[in-house]
Amino acid sequence: MRLFLYTLLVLLPLAARAQELTVLAAASLTDSLRDISAAWVKAGNRPLRMSFGASSTLARQIEQGAPANLFASADEQWMDYLAKRDLIAADTRKSLLGNDVVLVVPAGKPQHVTIAPGFDLRGMLGPDGRLAVGDPKHVPVGIYAEQALRKLGMWEAIEPRLARTEDVRAALRFVELGEAPVGIVYATDAAISDKLMVAGVFPTDSHDPVTYPFAATKTGDNPEARTLLAFLSGPEARAIFVKRGFQVK
Image 1 (cartoon, rainbow, N blue to C red):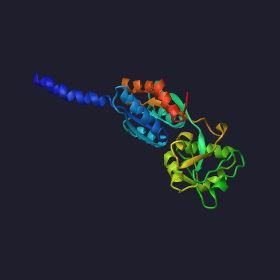
Image 2 (cartoon, one colour):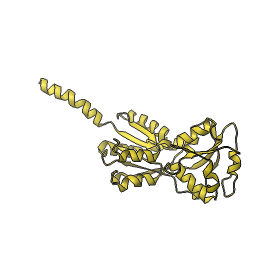
Image 3 (tube, helix red, strand yellow):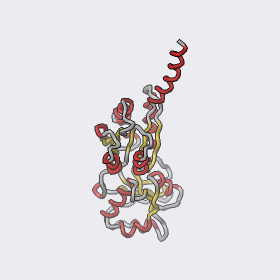
Image 4 (cartoon, rainbow, N blue to C red):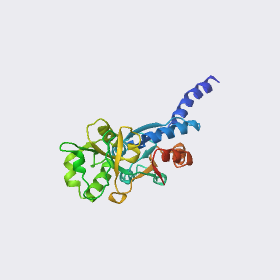
């Protein structure tokens, strides 16, 4: 009997830990996934362990063996990166969300522009100002921004003026703190700040569609992870995503 009780006491914490799920997600999902985690717990589940950052950084962490059950990317490219390396459970992959790419400025210096070929972005930056944006070499919002600026015929003129950041939230903070007069972020990120305003929305045909694929990782795939994925595409989570400004698919 004592051996049985000892074994039970040892195994129960292990079982509890086994049910803890780790989610690595794009920085722009921070607020919505925190809300969803609270709803997940309210439904009787353990709190989610969550880490947010640039999709590129998180994908490389998974590649290097970082423990994770789910990965949520802000573009298809970085999910493809893991898929090509057989690091996600392919049958769980689903693109759940969409977003807009917007130009933001300080709320105290309101501006409204129509973003089209020839609009005066350099004028908005002034003689010395820089454009805050996720690094286009690897951060999804920066990749979308480069596509849009190229389509608008402005990339060569603006590239030397970029303030390249590690993720979209860092670009947001640059403008909030006055380190840059203008930034490019997602509409959902702009919505969380009362220090900024949206000056204009980039035309959807100026860049690839902004999509958010979710998938279980190959090493973290288990029944609980799949249950969470179902929860993320269910009505309660969808309502939270909509409230936070995402377009649900």
